[in-house]
Amino acid sequence: MNILDVSNFEIKETDGVFTFKNKNTTIGFVRFNEIGEVEYIFVNPIFRKKGLATKLLELVKEKTGKAIILQEPISPLGLKLLKSLNRWK
Image 1 (tube, helix red, strand yellow):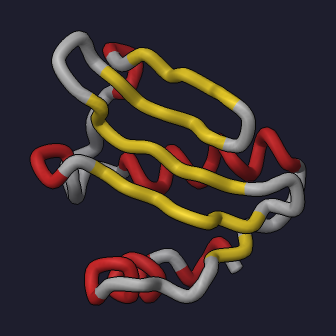
Image 2 (cartoon, helix red, strand yellow):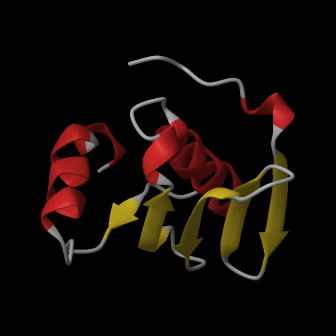
């Protein structure tokens, strides 16, 4: 995995959503609730496999102060992510 420097991205926070953006596009986002349950996570395909999903989950954990709870994935890619992120449970 090639770790991406997120200091060049804008991090926006709205009610229950963190979004990474650059001047051209949305890089990724995570939607969560106050108990730390991740409802949806997305990383732009161009920026995948660079640690962005992990960074988004770290933001959720810091914000909620709770252990991350991942909802059941709705896609094969989500299932693959869930398997790789077992440490968040």
